[in-house]
Image (cartoon, rainbow, N blue to C red; front, top):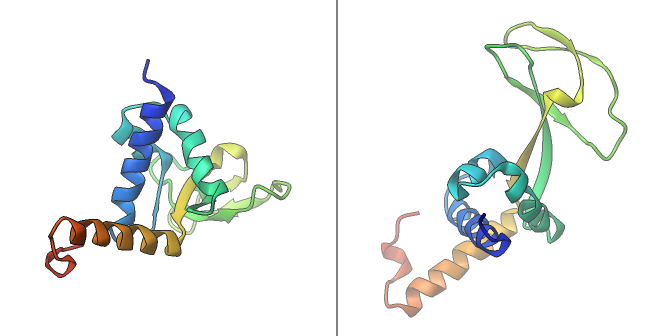
Length: 136
């Protein structure tokens, strides 16, 4: 059993690494794979980052078609989830929206990404590596 503080540190390490890249959003499964821990153990740490506005939590609607899984749109789970008929623009599957068709996605707050980049550039400058020689 891995301690929660170890999981938190690995989650933060991964988030900072992604923040330095062009990536704008990611799925909790990617973090779980990096940390080598189930999603249920990393999700609370991601939610903590949402609470302080470093990340935004979005909910994607995906096609339930066996070979499709196209992202169709987003829903706001703060509102009542309406049972509506949807049609996938890719494969044409028609389905009634339900909880099983909704998946979490985390988006970076752009100002947080900029903060992480500045922080890492300052670190490099302090260690004698000039930021202009770095490729991001």
